[in-house]
Length: 291
Image (cartoon, rainbow, N blue to C red; front, side, top):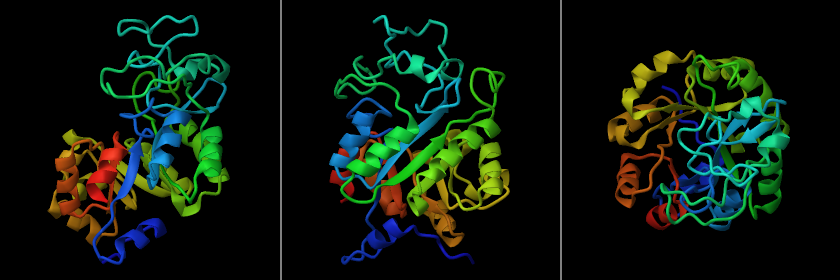
């Protein structure tokens, strides 16, 4: 039986004086329910709330810059063009991989009201460069902060033209992340099993998290057949999490970090299942519920 790998920042929590698990609070896209997603303002707010871990996503620009963005195009949910026009649902997609970062940085992604998160504070913001964002959080944080960073590679007929192929994606992003010398404070997560297998083979020192959807189900033993290795973390959509599959993961050295959990009742259910961490758009609610 493998011994469960617990990162140092979680070990202290799990051995707290009351002997009860303390959940690692992870701010989804920096806490998208509170501030514009995947922006410097969101990460700053999350650190002010005293979250343990910043969760965010990576994309690439045409000129090979690593950009913090969930979507590989400017989503009509939040995007405003440089001329002030709002991107609409039926507009042709404006893919980041077809644009230089200088062009990307001219779009605002913070001022437009977001129906999905009506309480989100509105501030002017751009999609930041990943290296500059990490430099900011490292200098701003009052204590060491952890990172759960997603490589947003995905198969499809646009791969390699509208968004990067998975090898180019990883070969560009991972050296940048490793150059920040974050050590075991860095987790790299991904849905794309091709990319996970590639990263494990090329950078065996990486701590990797296997993201899965609700339609993938909760049979983690079956899901692991998609990988050539056992990841340190499984990150499923929260509804598939049970006491049984969490216990199986722990018996096989895998931590569990469900996404994306905004309901206090679901947060409490997951704590009861024994998960180590929870990803939430509302880290303030998560902190109030589990700490």
